[in-house]
Amino acid sequence: MALQQSKVSKMKKRMRLAPRRYKGVATASCPACGAARLPHRVCPTCGVYKGRQIVTNTAE
Image 1 (cartoon, rainbow, N blue to C red):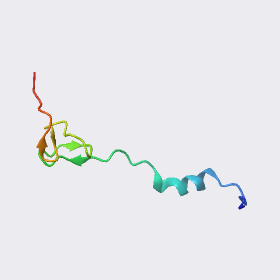
Image 2 (image 1 turned 90 degrees about the vertical axis):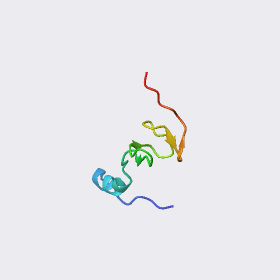
Image 3 (image 1 turned 60 degrees about the vertical axis):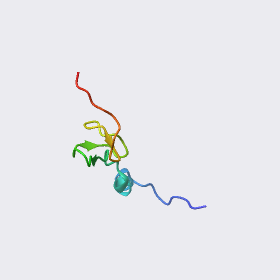
């Protein structure tokens, strides 16, 4: 079994893990209205998903 030869400093460890850092939530643009929305979700602005009107937004 392999054993650690010397202590890995916090800086070296963080440098190694840096490419895997959380980049945030990726958004996609709605093809119907162009608003930002989450991928694979109904657009909160116009209510369209995969080219079909799923939710009707009514202003009260």
